[in-house]
Image 1 (cartoon, rainbow, N blue to C red):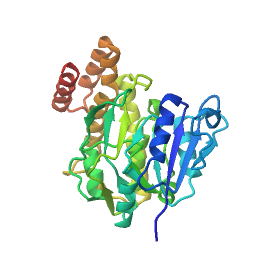
Image 2 (image 1 turned 120 degrees about the vertical axis):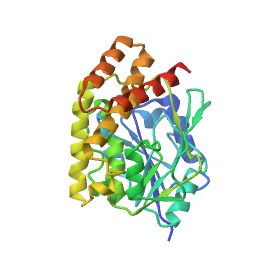
Image 3 (image 1 turned 90 degrees about the vertical axis):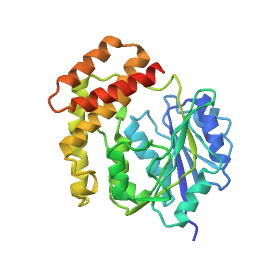
Image 4 (image 1 turned 30 degrees about the horizontal axis):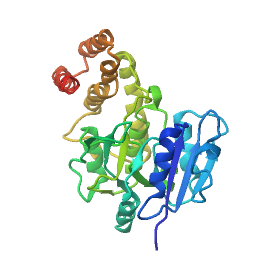
Length: 317
C-alpha cells in the first residue's frame, strides 16, 4: 500500500521566492499527496496574489495573525492530513526527484528520512554541495545522534521526512529560548529519532537551501549563548528521560553531558553567531565574545582556538 506524504510550506510572504518554491513542489516526478501553503504573512493575502492562487493542487491556509516561528511550524504540520510530513522553506527549491527519493525510502520501511541539500544564492547559482558524511543508505538512530553531537553532517528544517504521529508524540517544535528560535529543529530531530531504530539516508542532493540578504543574522553575546545552552541541554535531558533514552545512546566516545555542552557552545556559537559578526563587520563585538568564551572555565580552550582559526580562514578565503 502506497504511503502518503504531505509537504507543508509555512511562509512569511517572500513572494519573489515563494512562487519558485511552490513551482518546485508541483514539478515533482512523483507528485505529493498533499501540498499545504500556510500563510503566516502580515497581510494574509498570499492565496490572492500568488501566481498559483488558482491551482487546485495547492491547499491555502491562513494563520489569522502572524505567529512566531515555533507556532507557525507546529500549526503547519498539524494541518497535514497524511501519515508522513516534510516541511519546506519558503525560499528554498526542491529537486524534481525529491518526492521520488522519499517514496524509495518509505518503501524500504523507514519512518524518518534525511535528504541532502546544496547551498545556492539569490540568483539560483550553486554555492556549495553539502555531503552527508558517514551516511549511506541508512543509519541507526543511535549513530545518527552521535554524529549530530559531533556535528558530522548538516541538517535543516527542510529535508527531513517524519511520521506525523511521531511529531505529535514529541510535542513538535519546542522553544529553546535562543533568538530566532535557533536549534528548535536540532532538538526536534533528536526527539523524533528517539522513536525510530533506523533512519533512511539519501545519498543524492534532493533540495537547495537559498542564502540571501533577507535572512536574519543573529549576533548574540557569549554569556547569553552559554546560559541558553544550559536550557537546551536541560530540554534534551527531559525528553531523553521521557522516552527512556540512555546517555550512551546519544553521547559518543564516553563523552559527558558537560563535555557535549562545551562542544555545542564552541561549535555552534561560531557557526551561528560569530559568523554574524564577520558578516556585519562587528569586530569589537567579535573580540568581546571570543574573550568571554576564552575566560569561561568550562570551555575547552584548545577546541575553541582551533575552531576560531578554521572559521577565520573560511571568511578570509
